[in-house]
Length: 70
Image (cartoon, rainbow, N blue to C red; front, side):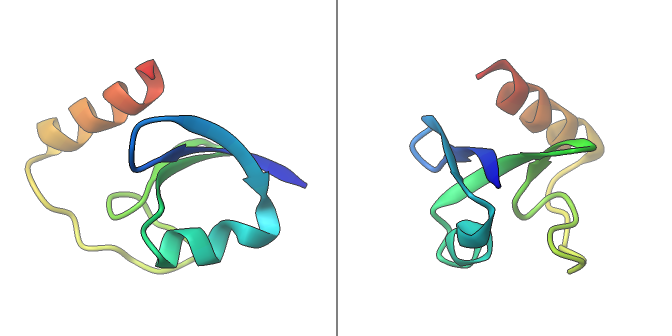
């Protein structure tokens, strides 16, 4: 299975779902699309790990909107 991702340089691509954990751990991607919508690494829950949120709710909303616009 393939999944759409956004890399740290802002480019998008498609990777194997099997590679997702490794790319998240190595901080190579900043976001990925899942069935419920876009997930941002470090902001949204990723692989059942609870991430610490940084910045205000408005900052997180703005970052999510920027990811969707790219």
